[in-house]
Length: 186
Image (cartoon, rainbow, N blue to C red):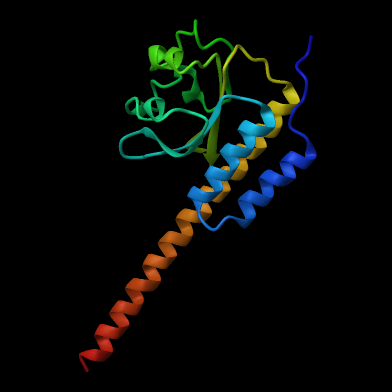
């Protein structure tokens, strides 16, 4: 029996409104993770940003997961969900028996039964991940998986836009500082 689609056009519109109207990446991530948990009836959701220096997935936002689970230790990109390094979505249908996980004991203690991992990719490079956690084994419909991949693409654009704005603010402040120093010294 095929899995029932849960991501409707209305849900996708709401997710896109969150992305386009949020004033910060943290606010956007918080709203998206909350909406996904409520709309999909899942245990939790997490958005990660990949630290290019340490190659760790750092939590940008999460909802529905305990602080103990969130702070279990560093989530290494190459070890977290082993097959995720290929840059494709990974569905761990039964997290209780999977050999894919970096923290299998903590996952069991948290009561996680399944994980959907979606890479967040910009310009061919993985810059983060979106993860959905269900309390029991879970089958996702092909249509819902496609919709979540589109959401991950949108997250990539939002993350890069936020980084660009941050860099531009720093440049503007630096130019203003140099400008004021230049004219104060004359």
